[in-house]
Image 1 (tube, rainbow, N blue to C red):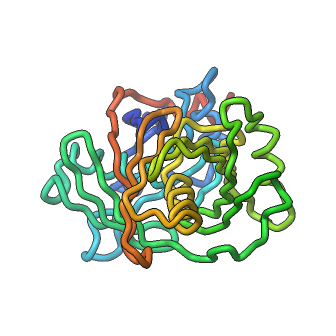
Image 2: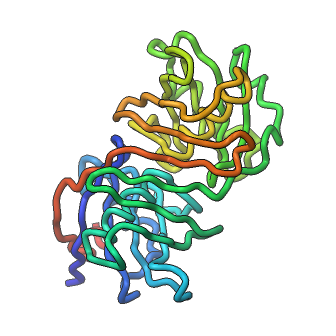
Length: 272
C-alpha cells in the first residue's frame, strides 16, 4: 500500500491537504485520486492539495504545486501559498521565517510571523482585458489576473446573492476558455469591504480566496480612490491587502491554522 503523510491547513477558511514532496516521489498526474481526496464526504475534504516540491534553483527554498479540488493543476492560490510557507517553517526549512519559492508561472516571497503569513504578490496583469459588465447587473465591474483570472462585481445585496448561480455564469462564460473566478463585494466603509467568491475548480463558493481578495481590493482602490491597505472580510475570516500607489507592490496578509496531521492510503482512492 502507498502511504502518504499529510497535514491539513486552513488559511482564513480556505482549507488544504498539504504534502511534503521534497523527495519527489509522489505522482501528481492521477487527477481522479486527488479529486476524491478533496471530497468532503468520502475523502479528507479540502479546497485543494498543496505540494512542497524541491526547487530546481538554489535561489528558492521550494516549489509550490497546487491542485484544485477537481484534481487539475492551477498556477496560483494566495491562501494556499501562505499555508505552504507556514508548513515550510514547521518543517524547519531555511531560517523559519523568510521564504522565496517558485510556482507554475513565477516566483513569490513570504514572511512567517507565528500564525500570521504575509505574501508578496508578483502577478498582476490583464487589467480590464475583458468588458464583463454584461455578466452581472451592477454599477461597477473589474477584471484582472492576480495569478488567477478574476472578475469582480459590486453587489449591495451580498448576503442574499445566489452566488452559485451568478458565479457559475461568469466562470463558464466563453470569454474564459480555462474559466475565471467570480467575486462579489459590498462596501462596509472606506477601505473595508465584504467579499464572496465562487472559485473555478471547486465549483462553489469558498470561505476565502486570497487572489480574489487582492483583485477586489485593487478594483475598489481604482474605482473609489482608496489607498492601501484594504481590509477584506470573507466568510472564513479577514484578509489585509496593503499596496502602493501604482500597485507594483501588493501583499496578502492573514492568519493560517495547522489543523491536524494524518495519513493517506493512496491505493484506496485509486481503486474506489
